[in-house]
Amino acid sequence: MFGGMVLYIFLHEFVHGIFIKRYSSKKADYGFTGMYAYAGSKAYFNKKNYLVIALAPVVLWGIVLTALLLIVPKYWFWPAFLIQLTNLSGASGDLYVVWTFSRMPEDILVQDTGVAMTVYGLSDSVTGDLS
Image (cartoon, rainbow, N blue to C red; front, side):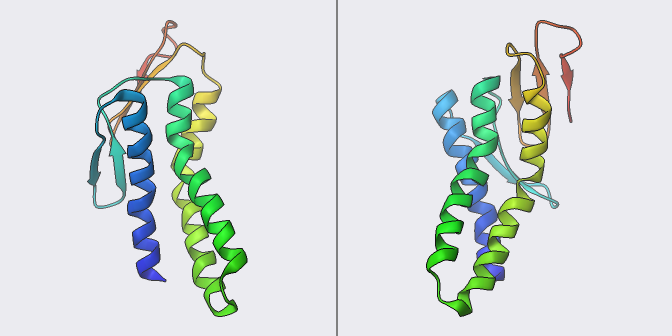
């Protein structure tokens, strides 16, 4: 179970990286701060693309893990369920960012290096560093 939870962390960040590459044509930068793993980029993303990048792992792995929960034998249910809980709790920061950015104007640009986020917009009230 612990191994699955650790593997999930890498897979979660890898999915962010796939979508970073898709929307920027640049490979993601991966790292670990000691407190959390991250995938980031120096590229700027429009609001729609960034929201997809942020939600991709929780949605993709949520579907995969839910399907897995439906087919695993009883004795594998709880380990798989705990990995699904890791999926949801591990995405809490992503969900917070989605909630926050979804309330911002459509014209924002987001740079997420993995350890710091910068948001630019036409309005002075939007421009800022979210690190």
